[in-house]
Length: 319
Image (tube, rainbow, N blue to C red; front, side, top):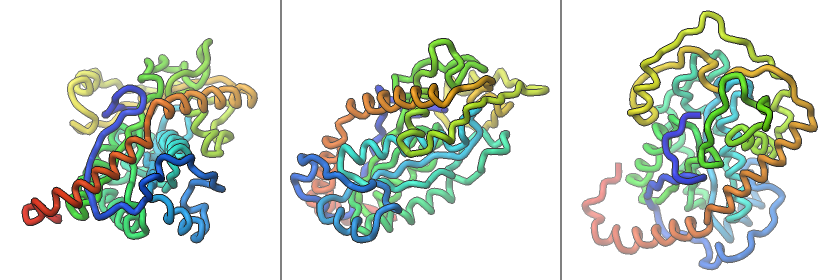
């Protein structure tokens, strides 16, 4: 996973914008979130959404690619932010807007499992969805992703929506949960090391369990060593001195993103790794005061609406 924005365990990039008064009750964040049948918007009935919007206005939007990633399912870099979104929604009484798993992949198109999209077209699509969510009553929209090229899509969305609507949105970048531990050597991922999986690998087991898809992680790893593998020594130098997306490149081989591993896991091992991964994700979530962030976002909305717009309204662009 390419990392472009990283602060501590759950890194934060703030992009503000604003639309109008936030209707959530002032004490909404202080109360214990009520139990819900599910936090996933498309799984709720319309009446359940109507009832939710009577008390709060928060929606978490996880996004990610479908791309080659070693022996992991192709959408693993979407599954991780979706799991975080669910846990944050449970903690902060929000809903989750899922299924945005075909974002711009970047350099991984050398693998034929990768779905190629174009970031500029995604910006227009996500802005359309944001307009709908705002119109529906979701005044605080929080994007989550951990994919390196994601800022190329998400940052223009939140900045342009801010200009257009004056509604503040927030961008959380999910980094490797344990302060980005070193990656395992090639061929040693997915629990094949003596100590078992760690860092992002362990978190992915937990993530697939949280979203109800643990069985998507295969028990039999059938990694194949690349044939006639190409190498690009210049790539490391360029990556070292540039942010993700700062220059154009493709990986020289699909195995360069996610590695290659062979071996077997038992269902029991997979379940145990999932428990450990969930604990790791929850530990990270506990370090993030999401209620404070959302309250600050609400307060900022009020400040922009009541103070900045009246003072500078004739100077502020709308497109």
